[in-house]
Image (cartoon, rainbow, N blue to C red; front, side):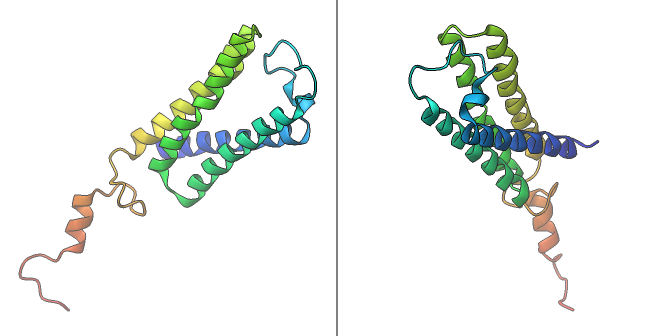
Amino acid sequence: MSLKNATTVLATACALFALYLGLSFVLAPEASTRGVGLPAWPAGNGDGYLVMKGTRELAMGLATGVLLVTGHRRALGWVLLAEAVAPFGDMVNVLAHHGSGAAAFGIHGLTAALIAITGLLILRETGKADPGHPGHPGHTAHTCHEAAVPAPGAQPA
């Protein structure tokens, strides 16, 4: 399997998982909080905060999906790196509120690492291609220029 195929599968999994989490928190916020590592349900009605978390997850999944579908792979790599901040922040939040260390590191920390690694791999994959030529994977500005400019002395057909 090529690096591009592997990173496409990983980025697709990231997008689908974010969409799943987002819908879970929007549609069933109380049920979705079990297992995230926080020690207790917030006092009062915390559903509104969980729906906000859900919409954040939905936005992350949609942004990743749009970049996947449109083929903007370099931007996808950068967005995944930026999105890795969210589960990292969730990990810090769980630890700061004396929640489960296993959930903090095992759920949120690993998720942040997976998203960041996927972003870095996509950036590595796209590093050799000229970002100004997204429709020509593997072509550099130099090779595209050579193909577009006729050789000296060439006559038009």
